[in-house]
Image (tube, rainbow, N blue to C red; front, side, top):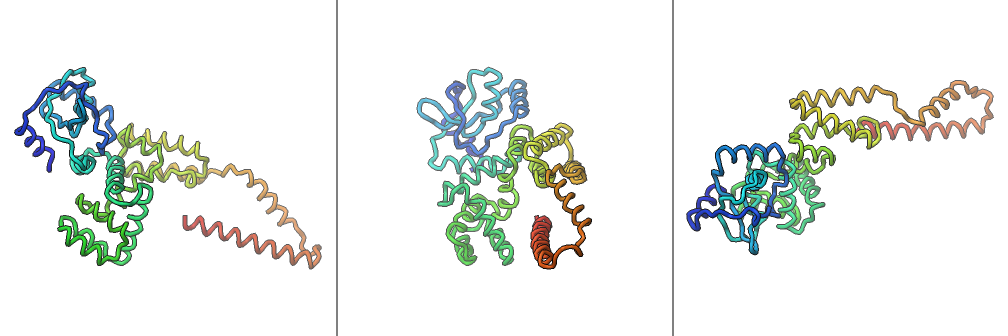
Length: 330
C-alpha cells in the first residue's frame, strides 16, 4: 500500500492524535539509516515556518510507539524542542521490515547504501542465504544467465503472477538459493541484474567512501569513481591512500564536482602517482644486479657454472613474465 493511502486510511479509522514526542522511538526495522544534518535542518525550517502538514505514522510498542513513517519530521521536531507530534497509529505488522522497505524503496532520496543493506537484510530474512553469501550468489547467477542470453526473461517477470515467475525461474535451471533470491527481488518489483550491478556494488566500497555517502551526501556514481583510488593503483601504502581518497572526496563534495570532473580528477591523481618513482627498497638491489650483469664477462666463467647460471636466469625470467602478465590482467 502507498504511504499516502495508508495515512489516509488510518486517519479515517481512528483520527489523528497529539503524541508526546518522548514516547516515540525510531523503528529498528527502518531501511533508511542515514539522516544528514542538512536534511534535518531543512525539515526543521519547514516545520517552523509551515507547521506539521502530515501526521507521522506510528506503531504501538508497549507503552510507547515506534516510527513507521516520518523519522525525519520526528528528528526535526526534537531539534525544535517540540513537545508533541500529530500522529496516526497502526498495529504492528508481522513482516515489519518488508512493509517498511516497500514504503521507502522507490523514494528518490533513499540513500543507495541504505537501500543495498535493506535489500540484503530482506533477502536474508526471506531465504536461507546468509548476508555474506547473498551478493556473490546473485552475481554468479546473473553472470551465468547473461552469458546464456536468458537474463531478459527474468526482467520480464516483474509484475507477473507467482505461478508465472516460478515456472520461468524453474526453466532457467537456478539452484534453490539463486531462485529464492531472484523471487524476493522480483516480489519487490526489482530486476536482479540491476540490483547486482548497481545496488550491491555499494557494499564493496571502501569504508571511508561509505561514510562519505552517509555523512557528506557523496553520490553513488561519484563514489564508484573514487573507488579507483586504491593502494594498488597509486602504488602507496594503505594509510597514505586513505588520506588521498578522503581529501579527494572532500574536494568532490565541497566543490560539487560533476561526474566527468570527478573522473578527470581521479585520472590525474593516478597519472601523477604512476609517474613518480616507486619508493621501493628493492630498486637499489635490482639496479646493482643489472649493473653487475653488464660488467660480467661470461667468457671467463667455467662451462659447468655457466650452464647453472643460464638455468637460473631462465627460471627468473619465467617469474618476471608471470608477474607482468598478472599486472596486465589486473
